[in-house]
Image (cartoon, rainbow, N blue to C red; front, side, top):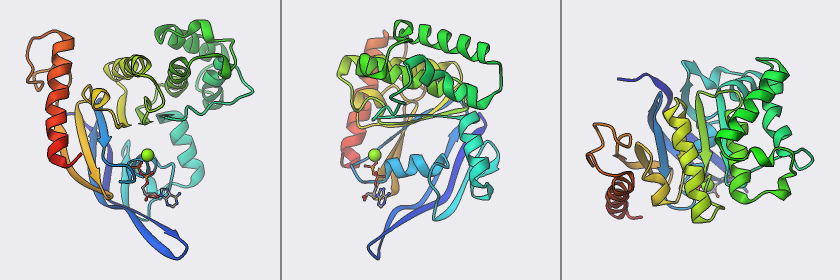
Length: 264
Ligand SMILES: Nc1ncnc2c1ncn2[C@@H]1O[C@H](COP(=O)(O)OP(=O)(O)O)[C@@H](O)[C@H]1O
Ligand SMILES: [Mg+2]
């Protein structure tokens, strides 16, 4: 069995708004293995984003524990958390946040410079390599308003991968994209996962989630169920030796049936 790289133990998150408390996450227990590609699905407002932000230490938890890379996040101060996020985690979001005043290339190299693990020349080289792999090298010098949504999200992915994170967190990474761009971004996420990055992704798309190894279904801040599809083409993947397109269709059908049972 692979090692657990991320674990939530009785994770709770309560927001207090105008004196009313809203228990958004209620005793979440989950484990993510190294190298896994896990999707979180569930109705709007079920706490998916909150789960992603608390489990990555981006937001604080109300109770419980998160163990990442063998360390308890609740015992880390803000400075340690910031460093850990910079060096070991990558993030992409539906809104594709990027610095407006910087070029695509400058946005991608920035966290590499901040980390200072290798020389700036090496960071630049790595950024170019990532951009080439992601098919966006021609956008390097452009402003962020001069590229398509799909290119921008691939640039966000390059930025997220610049420090070779252990885990990539993605909150509806294809939520703002058309179906062609969605599939292109998904393909890159699958490739990043194949090359060893663990991925934890929130998605509303059955088509996107069908490529992940496991799907966790959240309702009212509680894990209602999970479906294991296995890695595409692996022995856990019951679809057998079929073409990629056929395999994906079978996985998607299985997922859709399960989601219906979950009340999707
Ligand atoms: N910063 C916040 N302050 C107060 N309530 C919040 C905050 N963020 C999220 N919530 C509430 O938490 C619940 C879950 O939100 P969220 O995690 O964004 O759900 P999802 O991503 O599944 O749509 C919602 O009821 C939302 O209103
Ligand atoms: Mg959300």
